[in-house]
Length: 65
Image (cartoon, rainbow, N blue to C red; front, side):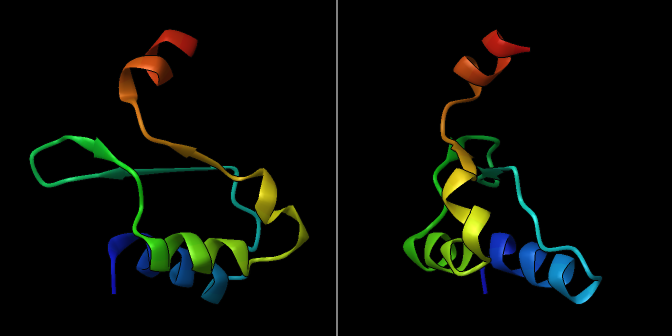
């Protein structure tokens, strides 16, 4: 299981069910998109899942901060 699905599963197990943003980082620090299985899992979280922002570029993310 990927870290993203693990984190989301832990979130659900602790009573949380809303996700705003997801950021996946490779072991070398490179920002990368989550795998297809993780994206599918996110889409099954409910009606607000389509609003989840998947951050794939830390440079554009930093520009917004």
